[in-house]
Length: 548
Image (cartoon, rainbow, N blue to C red; front, side):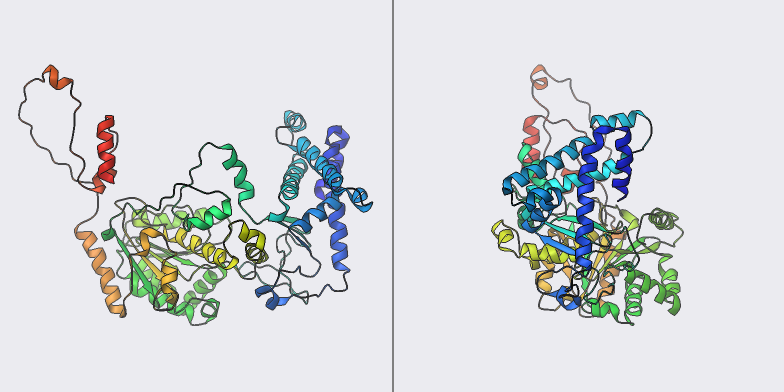
C-alpha cells in the first residue's frame, strides 16, 4: 500500500512511472481481495493446528491463501489480467498480456533505467523506495511465471509470521525462539522458490566453467539435484591439519538433545556441569564456543546459570561468559568483548554461547586461542513448525521433484541440519598450525542405532576422528593429555637452520644452462608451506607428484 501511494505521487512528476503504478496497483488490489475472501471463508478454521503441521499436506492458516506450483501461476494471471482471464480468453494470450505488464514494470523500475537515473540526478530519494519495491516484486512474479512448478505463492495477514496460527486462530510461537505474536510488517504476499536451480541455472548456462568450493558442500549428490547441474569433477579433500592437532569426541552426558531434553528444567545445570568438567582441561586464557539450537534456549540457560550460581563458577574457570543475541545491534560489541577477553592474556579467557545458523556459527574466523574448544550441543534440525520447511519437504517428496533428481523431503531435512552443524564445527582450526578440541554433545553420536549414520554426515576431515569414552574421567584425562602434548611440541612451520656453505667455484657455462633442481619436500606440511618461489615447469610437476 505504501508503494502504491508513493507511486501515485511519482507519476505526477514522471509520467513514465505509470507502468510501475499499474503493476503495483493490480497486485495490491488482488492481494486485498484474496485476504478478504480468506477472512470471510466459512471454512476458515479448516484443517490446521499443530498436529496437521507435523504430517499431511501443508494447508494455509486462518485468514491466509496458499497456492502451490501451477496454482500460483493461475492466481497471478488472474491478478494481472482479471478481465481477460474472466472472459475465458486463450490461456496463452492471458499469459502473454501478464508478462507484458510485468516486463514494462521491470523496465521502468530497473536500477539502471532512465527514470531511476533522472531521480538520481536530482540528488533526492523521492520515489526510490517505491520503485525498488516494484522492481523486486515484478522480478519475483516474472520468475514465478517462468518456473511455476518450483514456487509457492502465499497471501498472509502478517508477512513476518506466515503460517504461525493454529486452526483456532491463536498465534503460535516460533520454534527459533523469537516472539512471534508481535505484529510484523503487516499483510503481504510471499513468493517462495523451492528449488535453487531456478537462480543457479542462468549462471551455469552462461559460464564456461563453474567451480563451487566450500567445506560444507557434502553430500554432493544432494547439491547437484538442488542446483540442477551435474559436476563431472568432485573432490572431498582431507584437512591440511595433522590428526595430532585435532581432538574430536562424542559425549552423551545430556542424552538425545531433542526438544523434550531441551525443555527439561534440569538441562541448564547438566550443561554447566559438563562444561566445568571439560573446560578445566582446556588451556586458561583461551576462548571456547558452545553452540545451541535456538536463541530462546541460550537465554534460558544464561538466566538459570545466573540464578543458580553456575555462571559465577564458569567465570572462575574460563573468565568472561557471553551469549550471542539475535539481531546485529549487539553482535559487534559482544564479539569485541570476547576477543578482548582472550587477547588480554591475563589468564582469564572467554566462553561464548552461540546459535546454529547465527553470525558466530557461519563465516567467522576463531583461529588459534580464540577457539581451543568447541561444544556442538544437539543437532540443529530446521524447525518442524516453520511453514517454509514444511513446504520444502512436501515439494521434495513430489513426483516432479523426485523425477528432477532431488532427494526426498526427509533426506533434505536431515542434510540441512548437518550443513549447519558442519558450519559450526568449522569455526576452529583455521590454518595448518592451528589445534583445537571439538565435542559432539548428543547421544545420537554415541551408542544409539543412528550414531554411525549421524557421524557419516559430519565433514569428511573429521568423521574418522570421532572418539567415544565410556568413563568421563578417562575422557577428561585424554583431553588433558592432548593439550599437554601440544604444549610440549607445539605445531608450527619447520625451524630454519643456518649453515655455512663451503666456497664454491664459479659456475661453468654448461651449469648455467641447466635449470636449478631441488629435491621435492619430504612432508605434506613442507609442501603446503612453500610460497613465493618461482618454479620451472619440470619442478612444478615434480612437486605436484610429491603432493599426490
